[in-house]
Image (cartoon, rainbow, N blue to C red):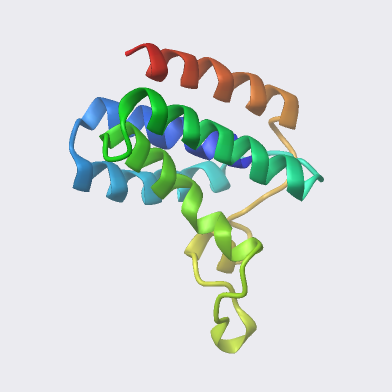
Length: 129
């Protein structure tokens, strides 16, 4: 999924759980689930980074830095940092399971525009709550 969709789903999960620790754990799980759904990615790395950071900033500003929704959104997006930062790659493989296991992260299915629209709708609900 695109980064803003990861942030939105993690935020929704954290808001529903209302537990900081639970939100972080669920965020990581939701990242893997999101990667398993066939989807199209946005080709602009800059847009991905900026939209994800904007979504996290909106959550932190509205709900607070340590709110479960903010933590869930951050935890759900965090595995994608290995696409842009030089994390170690033992055996030349990425660290997060959905990025490492062949066939888990599949292209096709949900277009990027639909993910972006869905992320906006989910974030609007979480930010209101």
